[in-house]
Length: 433
Image (cartoon, rainbow, N blue to C red; front, side):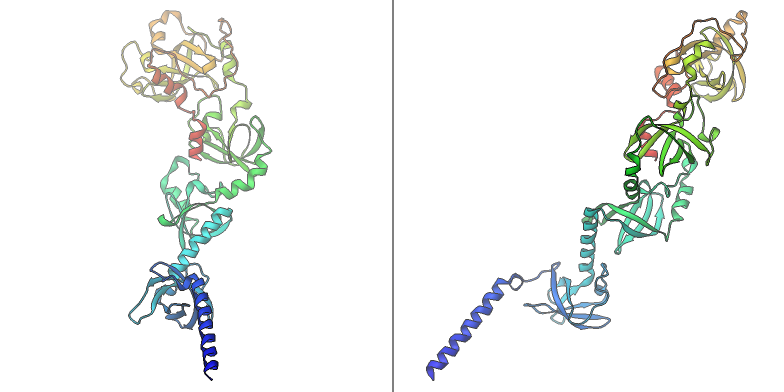
């Protein structure tokens, strides 16, 4: 009898040792949860206001009130017996239970899912909730996100002539309620930052088409928009920008002066930066400055129309292709404080040509020189004159230029007059787009 009792006791101790060893091997039984930890449990009771969980190796936990809300939508159809995860809010509440939250756990799962979508480059559908002048506010798994204006696809980008902020905002607000396909551009959980991009999806879809084109190719397409800085042309599912300086050889105030939305245009590809395509229409036309010496020469008296009055002088049209600059210092024999006191836009005046630089698309005019030498007489207007000076023809320039004068004007003013009016590097064009 005693032997049997000893054997039974030994067996119980062996079983206890085995169970104890199993518990020691399971790390969850060695770690006491702390606030903020994610724990696993099984639902033992559930109603609208409270869900009780059995946390193995520790104690019962409870999820109450707003903490039942799950931002990842994964716990919307819970039942008793389901295994779930929850975040520890407090190790012991007023009833001695562990206070838990599905809301915090769901928030964490939502961010984890967003991180995975970002790594995979997966497209997601988002609903536009609100708009401001910088872009669109959306929500992804109840996480607020932002879609900047610069990351909108061309079809949604608000091209508003004059850059009117009120009209831009009105256009952006028209997207409220719309579902848009986007990719995650950047995210930072700690900063609650989620930046999205619609343009990246459009760029991906256009890569194969873009690969068919190279710099120097000539395209034909429809003009889709006109802005202060240029015209957009759509071709083969792509869209390119013709900067205002690349529309025509002469200076123009606005693309609408020569173009209209919907008309067909031919242009040459002069730059490609990722999905950005830069076009030129003027390079498909003969450069009128190549043969300027056949029509004009230094010392010639010409009659021209004032196109623009600037603080530094007049832009003057000699013919439809050739424009010149009369600097403020060359407008009269005496000092001129304000060029508008001499002439207005549309006025026609006589000038003397004082410089011609075909390679830089510059021609300098002097009203003062004409007034100081009236005895020389005025020659016929440019279109009718036959100059005797040798031809100053030069190769077609590759840089964007503007009619301007080489006069005693400071270099900075000459540069502003000759090139600043309508030239812009690709970087500037890209920022506009």
